[in-house]
Amino acid sequence: MSDIIRVYKRDDEGSLEFREAWFDEEDSQFVVNYGAVGHQSKTQETDVSDAAAAEGLLDAFAAQCAEDGYAVIPDEEQYWVVVQFALKTREGTARDRHLADKASDALISHLAWRGLGVVDRTEFTDFKLNIFCLCPDVNKAVSAIKVCARGEDLDFTKLSIGAAPYTEPDTFKLKHSAKPANSFSL
Image (tube, rainbow, N blue to C red; front, side, top):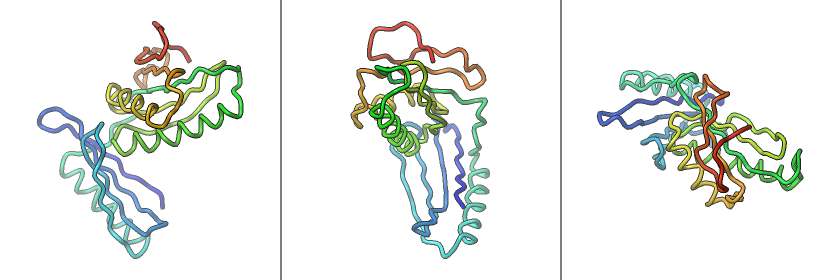
């Protein structure tokens, strides 16, 4: 069982909060992760005897979240945030494939522990590495991605970030570029 429940709600000031839970089979733990979107989350782990016990905890977690006003944000209400690295070759080199793996792994962790979304896919296009992230908050995701790229030494000088509503994937707007640029293209 590797299901994860991830839900959000706005607090009284309008800030987005998140809660998520899953069963870590390897450590036999039920894990709850929660906090303000864009900030390092808090985590609680509970030892469980088996997957059936974890399933019961997941069901109870989902019920409590619904009662507290948390809900899944549909993809259609989120944004594509694309982390793009300029490459020296059309298809990318072995070094570029290493960068893709390193950047994807770093972004998966960095975004998840802040409730900022998920890495959906990685693509090589003409002279570009594109990492597609599905995010509930564009501005906080862009800020976090820049922090992650610097912290993980991901060649910040080649980094551009574009964003578009999920339902309008042809309308990417430039959110960050290490080099002077006015537009963003895949």
